[in-house]
Amino acid sequence: MRRALVAANWKMHGSKALVDELVDRLVAGLGQGLNAVDIAICPPAPYLQQVQELARGSELLLGAQNVHGENSGAFTGEVSAAMLADFDVRFVLVGHSERRNLFAEDDLLVARKFAAVSGQGQIPVLCVGESLQEREAGQAETVVQEQLEAVLAHCGVGAFADAVIAYEPVWAIGTGRTASPEQAQAMHASIRGILAQHDKELAEKTRIVYGGSVKADNAAQLFAQADIDGGLIGGASLDATAFIQICNSVS
Ligand code: PGA
Image 1 (cartoon, rainbow, N blue to C red):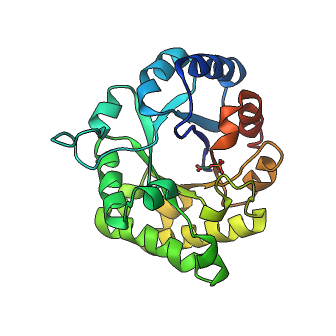
Image 2: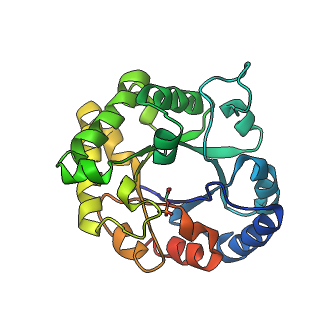
Image 3: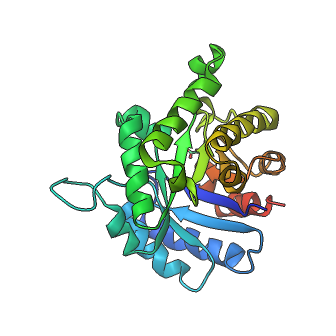
């Protein structure tokens, strides 16, 4: 039985005041007794310590949105996995489509980041997903397979032992257009199938979460699919009521 994960990706949103209010409400609404689900909050890096302090004593876990592939060095403006470890960061997003598309991150760079995160004993959340053009051209499965195989080739299947994969179709991110439960389930099953070709047992244990316009009113249907083990939530995670409802949609 895979334990579900719901992760909040706040992206570049927030302020000290908003973080105080939002995390207080999340701790009150979700902080204890989470039997079936891990809940992670991925704030912008400057607020990691604030979230860590506000969430202390609760079961909320901390995540980061980005990381550099090296542990230290002359990389102005970057943050390493070792630094994230200082703030009890447990999950780190790698390969989010906004990083791939807006910051030109390619598969090799994503794989290096994945390796750096697992090297620190943290859980990489590898984001994969196709564009609308690729889906309409019938290439969705191939694109996702290539993104996944690039990391498998660089890091080895063993590095996926605790990893999470987030399937996020680019056309569904921030657009209000969600993949249907059937579309998402089909891709999740295909991802699990690719992992199974490398290691059958590991594939059964790997959590594959869905992201892309998950809201309070569509989460339950998505999470009910056999191969969907939770969600990566952008916009709706900035609304405490909506995010709590989404977390409670895990059955
Ligand atoms: P969204 O973002 O929920 O706003 O579509 C998801 C993500 O980018 O992780």
